[in-house]
Amino acid sequence: METELIVNNINFNTIPRGQTQKDVNKSILKFFAELKTKDKFVFDSILDIPCGKGEFVSYFKKAFNLKNVCGADIKKVSLPEIAVYEIDASQNFTNKFRQKFSIITCISGVMEFDNTTGFIRSCKNLLDEKGYLVLTNDNCFTIRDRISYLLFGKFRRFNLLIKESGSTYKYIPIQELIKILSENKLEILKIKYTSLYSEDFLLLPFALLIYPLQYFYLNNKYRNFDKRLRKMVYPFMSLLCRHYIIYATKG
Image 1 (spheres, rainbow, N blue to C red):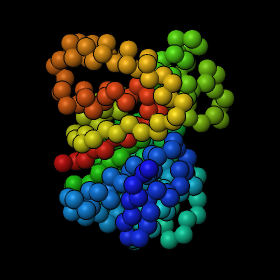
Image 2 (tube, one colour):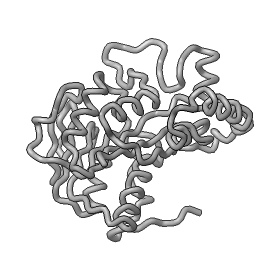
Image 3 (tube, helix red, strand yellow):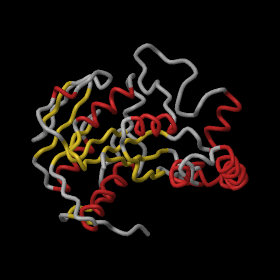
Image 4 (cartoon, helix red, strand yellow):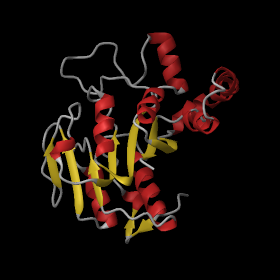
């Protein structure tokens, strides 16, 4: 039975899923609730880009009683007591804001637009000196995805043919995000894999078979890479969980 996490009289287990995988929004809220409690991290502002319909940022505002809350998306939406900007995330949007933020979140967003490098650079420029950048994305290295690619030449989340107006079209793997974050001098503090469904446990025997091979390959082929980073990027759960969350900071 899941332990309740209540902060400011709000049960984080009731957070809406929004337009992402299950448990993603809840995991992010838990992270900052625990960070605020244990490390006394003081945050007073947040930007969610792209914010979609605003489920996450609205709940975040309520949970932490923040006044300085912003959202941004390609199409502007109206949210109570939240400033929402109409922004193309593939373009430099630094000058759209006259402030910096304690937290910037991009939840299931990097697959929806081009110029990921420019996007992360803009986010970095809008972060406080000790602010947090949170990126989440679909994990395409699961056993399910590997089988799908072997049989059909596609990752499970992406179609073989995409319509002109189709969303979620850009496959961007975790190692590419890690590279871009590193190039922009953003320190990766934590990577959490989440969104595990009951049917995923059916592939547990395959994961137990594959993981030792993957572990041996990583630790021999990439021994010059930081060992801590190798463990964070490719833990055992990366073979089963459908989504991951990257927490990075300017220092």
